[in-house]
Image (tube, rainbow, N blue to C red; front, side):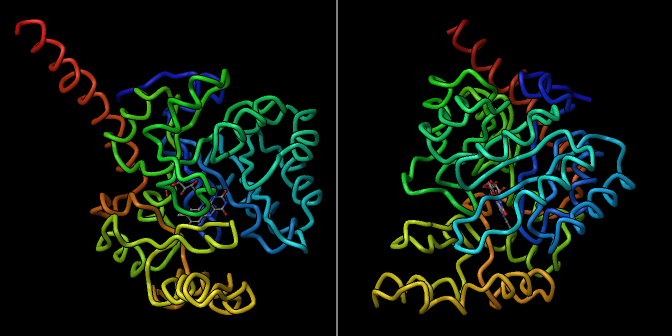
Length: 331
Ligand SMILES: Cc1cc2nc3c(=O)[nH]c(=O)nc-3n(C[C@H](O)[C@H](O)[C@H](O)COP(=O)(O)O)c2cc1C
């Protein structure tokens, strides 16, 4: 089996430079343990669990399904009624988890709590300046989420072909390229751009072990790279979601009618997004997916996906890219 050795695999003790980032309603034991068993790094999503006690139980459930390392994602939400973060941190620390992915805002208070316990922190950022800030705060690696990504791409709209090398020019900690990656081509490109690993959300969403209704997986396969919407742009809290009747309505209300969050609150309710995954009606609510769905053409097992990516990456490096070199040498 092919092994790609990078600063990421060394720092985190993970076999392959492939990460499954936090995914609300999806990052549960079934998926995360499958990712771990395939030799990649999966993250449970803390806030998918209604209480810190439920998170502790989900961590224990994941341990029953794998003896390999996995992490927990703690997303910092822009909300006036924040979840009890300190208690979620406590559940993570007391469960003996050794890797945390933070995202959404400044991770300072989380780092201060995690680091004395030897927990490694990967912060996910959407700009070079936020990545640098996280490095200064002492994170162990940065995930750099380009404009292509599902979820929150930020407001700068810089795609990864520029964002990753721009980050690599400035950062010294390992970099994980996130957004728009779904196969070996994306993996090899990200490594060439200066990344040490890749983070994928959408690609893992459409795998056998992803705990969502098969209709949603088939919708991802059917969708093209044109089938996403950028929602909440006027609120400066942009979210890339699947294009459907609900997300198009939200965009219309906010952008054409000049509506406020109150006018779309019911349409974007998290409970409706959750029902999409549970009931399998892709038009029920808003759900996250990235541009990469345009190159997602099947629903493999996680093991098949990871193996295919690293094997094909080897082929790309040793045959296609090396072949180009040979061709120019004899030209
Ligand atoms: C269904 C779904 C839910 C997500 N939820 C979260 C989340 O709760 N917290 C977070 O930090 N990122 C979340 N993300 C973003 C992913 O972790 C990852 O950064 C992103 O999917 C990368 O882009 P890609 O989809 O092009 O691979 C979510 C992505 C998807 C597809």
